[in-house]
Amino acid sequence: MTNFSFTFNNFMRASGYPVRAMVTMFIGALCNLALAPFFIYYLEWGIKGAAIATDISMTLSAFFVLSHFFSSKSTLHFKAEKEMYRVRSRVILPVLSIGAAPSMVNAVACFINVIINKSLYVHGGDTAVAAAGIFTTYTSLMTMVVVASVRDATDCGL
Image 1 (tube, rainbow, N blue to C red):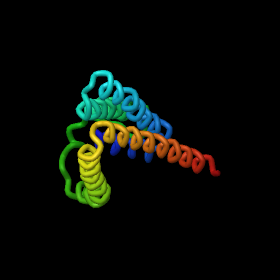
Image 2 (spheres, rainbow, N blue to C red; image 1 turned 90 degrees about the vertical axis):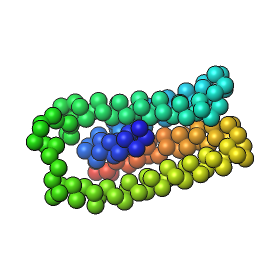
Image 3 (cartoon, helix red, strand yellow; image 1 turned 135 degrees about the horizontal axis):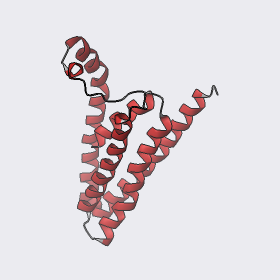
């Protein structure tokens, strides 16, 4: 769900909705900030609780992104026309060439995150993983605020 949410979030931002894209990240981050401590400490689920909180948060974020693209009011939106879904190499090859590098970066980042979480768990336990998750979420939240602010400023000619 994370890849799905982030990918469509980038489409949302690129199609002229930077504030909505920021809200998408807020939804995931704030839900995770609320759910992770609850699952980890109150329900005593430990690392399993952190993972469940992240999954729930990313799913909510993904549904928000999907609702945007299913709306006919958005610049880019899903249409259900049979002819559109025919595979054409002249369309697929440019898409693959544009998306291959970001996809590999995302896959490597996920792999690095697995290594970091494993190391944190071995050396610090559930608390270390939870702290790193909260820090990462907070960092993502602040990054999205800055990206949306810069985008809005450039749209205004500043």
